[in-house]
Image (cartoon, rainbow, N blue to C red; front, top):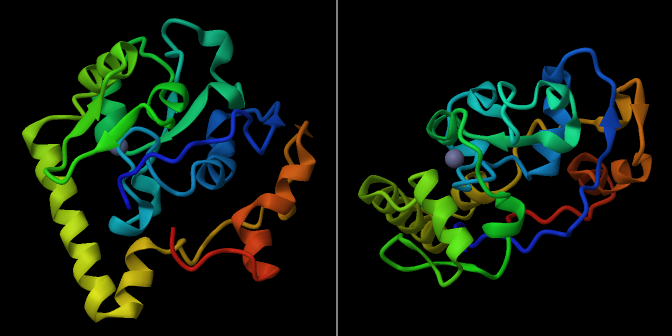
Length: 197
Ligand SMILES: [Zn+2]
């Protein structure tokens, strides 16, 4: 289901470091977060341009400038969520959303019994009527496509065509080089990337 938060591995698969600009981490973050917003799960493939997704500083730059170029402080976020978050200090979405804590109901709302997950949902306004309607709309579109148009379905919930070839990138250092073999590009090349996710 497109709005089920995945249970993520605790560890990130990539570990590039020491880029001069945090913007250089973009291809790594696209792959790390499966080309969708860490907060609301909006997918790149649903928008017009890839670049509209933003690199969110989990600890805001204004609060902790030392972590401005720290890969492990960066999250892949849609413009809506990044602009709602702004300089708020929030709980870690990888722990509070990407877990079994949160369920998406058929009416598009997010449900959780966990107080910290609920706080994060509130801070990011993830249960607004508009967002719930938006989830229902996409669930219906994807269900219709699954029923009637396999190509369209694959386009809506498959990986983008331009998954980055991370093996070609040269970050100053990379502490998790082995992660490249788990990247979408490598998995697509070896025939192990699922058609939809
Ligand atoms: Zn979002």
